[in-house]
Image (cartoon, rainbow, N blue to C red):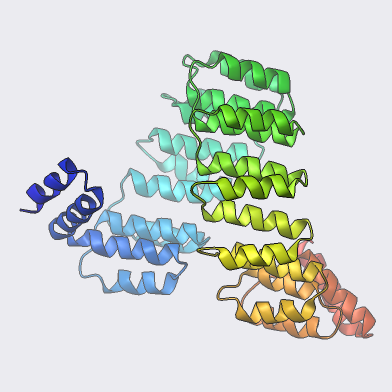
Length: 404
């Protein structure tokens, strides 16, 4: 009954109803899917305690459940806990190994990643790519290349990672040489070359490759627009945007951000108002542009119109008030914030030159957040003003220990 109803919904193009029916069917056939999905949702919300509680309460677990726990811990930067779950798994599959390996690599723990990589008996492409990505992102390009050369099977992601690595840590010639060795000049590889040329400011090579590409997607066009904007070719970037056969929110946002970077606030706002579908990134980009250009009132009006806000939105407004030395409004705004992160606390503290900075600093630590360099500078400065030499010395020692 479920299946027939779902397919009737598909034929009738009632896709939302079809999705709901298929989801119900999946839950009915596999109740573990519901539990696993809830664990993933908790981790995405950074509600680690609820995820762990649910995991402990589950009467039955499958390998997907364990993998959800590993990925969730890694998502929240809890690598040690992820490894404990990994080691406790009764049965591991390739997803388990790849998730743990990727977690180590993304966090720069390459020796542990390599040790785990060497234990994998049947390595798939994702395992190899995770290890290569770890080396490349840490600037260890030669070690990444050695693995790349040893790969029995490479995919486009493998080639693109190495090309990006050469652009970042090597030379344009090395990136071009590797690109030329690829048997297939796929869209992904061409886009990697476009991005690399843009980062290096090789505008002639950038444009030449773009014109020679047999096919282009939205990412290709957006890469060109971003590069032209970065190089100050604002009108050229806008012409490309107008020529785009298909635009997405990323392309619209790239032009808006480009205008804002070049202090063309009115042009940015005009385009923003024309944007058919605005996501949170577009709203925050426009908000950031207003704040960074001293238009805090305009930013506030925009902030009030936002259909949804995240912590970045709130932090931008907070920073705007601090920049205007409006510490009273900033403090009131901070108290109203439904969500706060380290940036929120650091931003507010940096605006104080009184003992209130010390009070907030202590509260920040009590909430489990870490100070950044600007916060510590503010606290040390206040210690000097108030002649609190013992506090000042303690701060200097703390700064030295954490390497700021």
